[in-house]
Image (tube, rainbow, N blue to C red):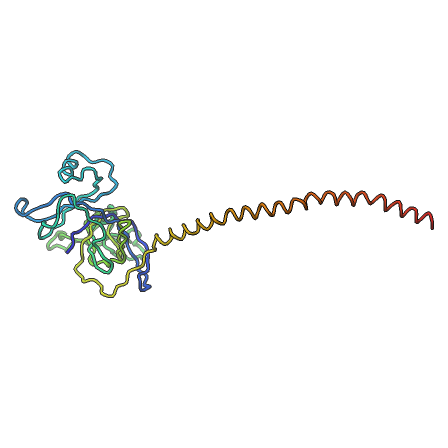
Length: 288
């Protein structure tokens, strides 16, 4: 079982897998993570690995800076620290880095995070109560919870009664989400289904208990190398064709120049012949 990782929820989208099936996925920026502390049974009573998420944090306070200095990663902008329980820490060392490459498409993962906070919510929104009847005389009872007590005996409200109160902002886990795609170049993982928390919230990803799909075909990422080669070839062809185009344009301009210079002369000859034609016409009339 691979160690868990810390990530940041990016958002949701829809992609098509290799079989052409549309899947609604959540995009998570997962890693890179570094090992910041090792917990051993001899010293701490349990075995665990403390991971740090290298994010965009600008400032780190002095206690955290000293903690990261002992691990040799004080130069990283660690956003979040989280411990993951394991059987033994022999395979890990301080400063070791982990990426999204340890997860493969077709496997299942557990994702945990803090759900969105809704503030103080009523019973209809918080517990999906249907409210009171919308009849005559019930003008202010449409979203009321109704009776909450149990009569004279026991004469009090039972603990755990569903009532209005603080909604959301709780630790929530979603089990067995399918890994549709991983993008190691951008440290992204695409899991099918919803993930707790808002966009930009911190989430924790671990291996799921369900076995991986044997016949799953992941989507094919576009190859950026081929696009670069095609662009390079097009630019080379364009550079070779540019001098020829310039020469042809210059040749056309030189051939067209004499035509433009002869046009005024032709117009002038037509204008000069006009008085001579009028004089001949007058002579013919006089002879007649």
